[in-house]
Length: 618
View (spheres, rainbow, N blue to C red):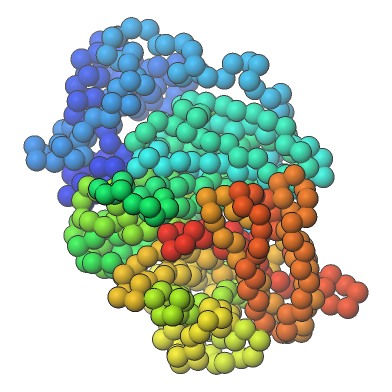
């Protein structure tokens, strides 16, 4: 538990008061006061905590361990910030106060027999996706960004800051799909379950807050299906945070600080690198730019912890810090990556977070989930106002050519400027040079550029500063696209909108990807007054005829378009769709009489200049 000591004693832990984890002094005292009924089990914490002891014993020990060491590590002036006790935790573990027996019922075991679907466990074979190398890169000739979901998958949820968490599940089968959505808290305890039969090619939403996600806590939502093969479904978790109440009444529509989403993924294995940045672009240096690295045990109820090392690497490739990871069975912990690369002072910095998991005793790979998100605070310390926040999709290195848009526009007569920043992270032990191909919207090459990266190093390139695009801004807001062959390099494109004075308004991340086959599908959403804009790239060296069909969640066609994209061309379509609807977008490309791959699609969902959500096609 040296990790907790290190995290809890940091001055920047004050930023975490509202997000994500608050365990502390009061709860520690409560637990210590009631330790007598479980003393025999909790003295040797390591053994019972990760064994098959009853849940009461295991999770009591886990809380004792966290709270006790956190309280001992905090100085007097830090207890208000990093050792405050959550009322919700005290309520949830009220048996600790009374010293009474473990409460049997919905609080800890909400799964009444009639609520569960009779879903067989159809998963088999190795956990490790065959498309991923042990070092975290895609195998040669594969873009492992597209990893068809297994029958069961999980993603992170967060109840801090009053966020609303919604799980969206899309059935890609032509037959019905049986779905079970469950919520596990940060210690891996199942708090709620909901199940439903999902009709063919349709989507359903589940509110995780109604499944036991308490305010000021976080955990994991899992989807379990009766699918007999991979790729039968996909889904995302969307989080929205409304802006803090204004002091004066206003007739303006309701505002949001941010909305973000995380796609469901298969468990990861091997080493994973994620991009980190505390660059203060469009925000004052006094504002905290937080990067949260979220790690979750992907094999719950096996009685074993998730262990390993989390390294923080600067942009020159030097390891700044390494902290141990020890997460309870089925649990989750969020690590402050901004402290890892930017220090407690939150200096502007660029780097990598690298998780190196330990293998099981038999040498097999240990599965886990890992995501990152950036939060741009309007303060340093404890506040609930943000410029924006967004999830950073995991873009593993691939040997295939990947493509993405170049948005260098000026919107609304110069009042809003759009910037495109390309972040590159080298995961190899040798220096690399990344070539960039640059194209306008008609597919004409407008130049090439290169980016040099040191071994294990990082770099960020503002696409507007590249000679080929310099000065090319206009009302089209989509001058073209770029391509790159990253090899050992992982990439993310960060798009931000700034006011005429340079203040950050919103930002979102788009992963450069290769083509994902002849037919692709993604989502649209017009609820919350959101606008939808589909962006389609042709990565082929020949023209492609494209059909785009928008289907409502009940299967009806809402829009159908056909157009031809020239070689390397790009098209951006503002979709005119009915309000308060959601569903899918299906795109396919053809040349002559044959379907062809080479089309890259994403749908950008925005709400004014408040937030942007990017749904990449699968």
